[in-house]
Length: 165
Image (cartoon, rainbow, N blue to C red; front, side):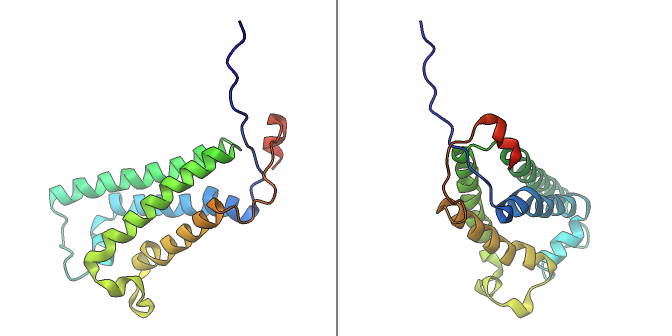
């Protein structure tokens, strides 16, 4: 009895811009977010909104921020390790689509700070630069990837050729 045929994996060559952004820059950015939300909670809250930031984070806020740090950590590991482990275009597209949806959710959470948070560049602090335009950049990179920009002719690569990218 023959084993059921598995669909062929669609492998591709990763453009250096995508490789640098998705496998290095964005995971480092997420790890930075994890560090601040867990180890520098008061600083993080102050940068997020100085007017409402407490001097000392209440216990429930601290726990929630540590949970957020864990999500940043998960985001970094998921992107850096899952994408690094495969040259299957379907896996990349799936992961990046999920992250694009998460980007929209991330931007939506900023709405409590008022609409100017999305466009008032002159009022942005370091946290805002990471929470708004860097997310815009990530979304743009994901949309471009999902549309096939810079992927050229995605073709099946032999497994031995995956690592040569």
